[in-house]
Every structure is written in structure tokens, then in C-alpha cells.
Image 1 (cartoon, rainbow, N blue to C red):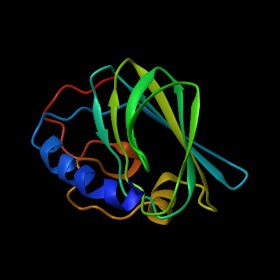
Image 2: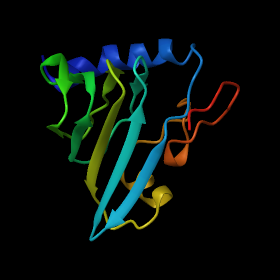
Image 3: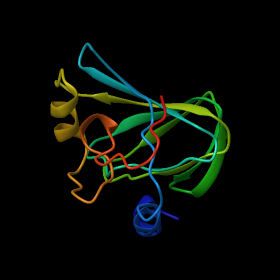
Image 4: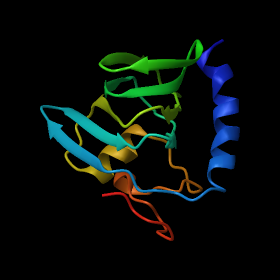
Length: 143
């Protein structure tokens, strides 16, 4: 299965997940030396549908266990583990346990808004805005 083939079901899953209550995931942003690192904590049971990425980057499961879409289909990974993501990639992730995942990107940006404009496709229907902030907060926010 190719990354292109996996994107259609991930997009369909996104439409279904958007019908469910959303939670805001604790996210840390770090810029250093032309790189941007984004760390996202995920509680067990959370389903995360990422945005489409424009550039190659690293995706790391630092701690915990997740099931994640890859070129080969859905695989279960226990951290620490590193994946390489290609342009056009959108990942669906299910947190089997509490987990910390991070992405590392090359960018000249030094703020989150500029980095996201540079690195991910604009998705007006996403539940999340700049910095992984929930657009509407009708549900409990994780802290």
C-alpha cells in the first residue's frame, strides 16, 4: 500500500472523527537552529488526525504505544521509534496508551503561525487552529 492509497481512508476517518467530541492535546513548540519541534501528549484512547504536511519531516513516538498509518498501512509502535514522513502525508494515530509523539521539521520560521503556514496545508474544516488549539471548546480541555 502506498502513502497516497492510505490518504483516502484517513480523510474519510477525519470526517467521522469530527462528528465526535474533541479534546485539546497539550502541545509544546520549540524552535532552534532552523528546526521546529512539536511535541503532542495524547491520552490513551485518543484518535488524532493530523493535517497534510507539505515537506519531509521526522515523526517520533517518544513514549507510549500508538497505532499509526504508514506507507505499509496501520502499524502499532511502542516508543522510542522514528518514522520518516513524505510531503503529502496525513497520519491517523490512535493512542493505545498515554503517549508522547513529536515531529521535527526544517524551517526558517521562528513562530508557530509562520511554521504552520510553511509546513502544513490549510484545512478550514479542521477542528484545530494554529498551534494545535481547539477552534471551539464545547468539551473538557486536557491540561
